[in-house]
Image (cartoon, rainbow, N blue to C red; front, side, top):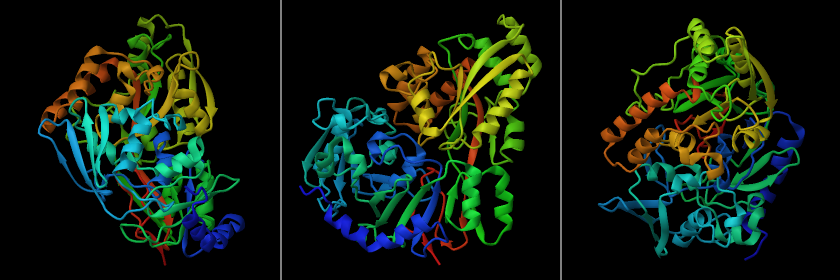
Length: 524
């Protein structure tokens, strides 16, 4: 196996001058390269090893999965698998693969590559498991084994029926990596990524930019653009300034106070799309004061979520009411409703919990991140509301990647509450990964606040093994009601995602998945 990826280097040489100009000059962007303003550098370019939408927005343009979401929906359609069959007992999924597909390194895509991708994640004894970590392998924890039946047929054998499997396979954790590249580079695979997607990795610059070049042999047709450049600009206002100056073509997660100005300027186009998003505060249930449910309910009553949505987010979101986003209309219970803004009730609960003379909490905040909206301004508003009911807030602010490294391993000994946002693909995803007892960080999950309720555990286990959607819906609604009462989080906002692009950008659409799919995007 040659380690130089010759095909990639040739493509990179063709576009090298253009991408270098886009990187170095920081002037008006080239006609055949789309420059995207990202919220941060990607943590990794290995799809098995990341959790952040910031990274996913790059990776979905480099890799493919067996299936993908149909444009404009969260319904699954074929991708690297042309078709599939599900056994009557729901325990085996048989996928028939697309022929004549190659990875960017020139090696063939086949059933062995699929098996390698998932075994690497799921089998601690796999020879390349130590190229991880694999934080979202939870998505596939019910997979017993993956069997390459023949070069173009692969079977997933499950331990139990698992309703979200296809949806999870469409998520970036299910993107297929080149076994040859992983074997060649080992733990450094993320610096030499190889998928089957519409764009190939070219390079990562010293400033953290990711340059991709078109894959002309892409199985789903060549991209419209010659290349993509993902430029990290952590400050949202600075991203907006760069777009206004023409040094980037597209930005996501636009500051709410800039939307109207871009909307009124014919040089730009504003894009909006609803999707399953939740912005919330994780409360640390392991330590005082939020080990007491009265204090958890008190902060839910104390925070004026509608003011945050209206004044801070300028109407780009709605008030949240629980862990099942209303975008999943079939599984969401609107009757539960959000916690009302009721400072008097909050003060009464605080006094009842023995903190009538005041209490101090440590609040972990990020200055930006995937789906985090306007986290510093939101934290300021939350701090003022809590101070008004006798809770003194001590805030610590971190950049996004440092923040994830601090919060994801759990809040014990670090803070009493922390900001978080999730964009999810199924009602199962967020509660399963972040609210189950078995999802405590020590077990590899994202239950950073240590919430535990055996009934919620039971309902979630049943919901994910139930094929009938009406039955699943009833179970998720019950989860929503219980979690609302237990209040392990403060449910703040469901975001309507947005982006702004130069009017020269053609063919862009935002997806309910929150991914940024750029294969069909061009520039006039």
